[in-house]
Image (tube, rainbow, N blue to C red; front, side, top):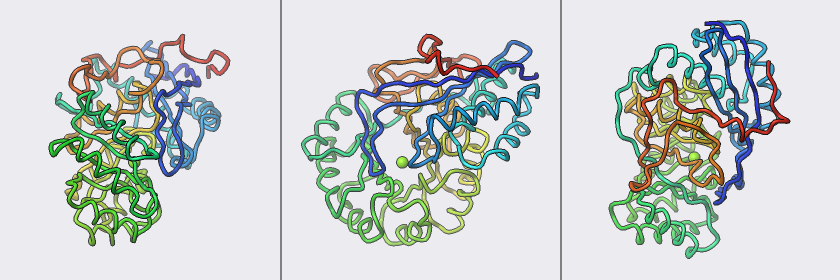
Length: 369
Ligand SMILES: [Mg+2]
């Protein structure tokens, strides 16, 4: 099933509730979408959501690279995902965001060609999953409390708190949320590399009575030894996020005993093809995975939801990026339940089920290869 055409477009969406993390502020989505069209008429959609402080790429770079990748795979078999992703991954070091867009479009095509939803193509059985909702870093404890109350009012049963402030400043914020939420709400914290080793030990020890779920990326991206040392030292599971992009990182982290959990993001892994490998390595080591996101629309979140449903070892769901989008540019795909906070509904549509509403795309940035 040869590829005859690839459309590439920029997609920009404002976010009403910007998320501040130690690495910067996410206040809008500046993404790139691709539509891969085959000779049979079957097409697949993919989305890149670059965040330079983590992924090292940008919308502009992704847009340029997309043209090169499109020219490379045009005329070739869309169903040979192993071969196509092999070419794409070999031709581009870095830029996982745009590699992921091509990957999820190819999986979309494969599932449509098989006449089934993507999670079924991946061998999965339908299961219920619920995402957490993230609270960014707030200036005051009172603001943190207000944000947490909104998450609880929306019916979520899991809160992810961004932390990574100086010294022990985070403790009061996390304590306030635990007091507000009561004992039955899962609370996880993500430092986005904001602590050093002594600060991480001090914070995690001080938060011990708060019954947290895990500490995500407490230390710098490169500090595998620090993560391993911290994991031995404290009584809280450690989850690697920025420290793991692909399957090779997964193997290294596990060999060093540096993480209890691994955070798979399609935009770091370069898509489902490598996401499956990360999960397989983790599962073989008895390590659970979470699935996370950047500033993706429901398009990329739909692909991630199919992967999560298909692999029960992916136990922690953080697919909330579009929750605060000002506009929804997506037709079909995953949706949030309007009563049970964070419950994800995935229609039984072939492929990943999501498409971009063409009217929302910036016409001046649209090109066809
Ligand atoms: Mg994270």
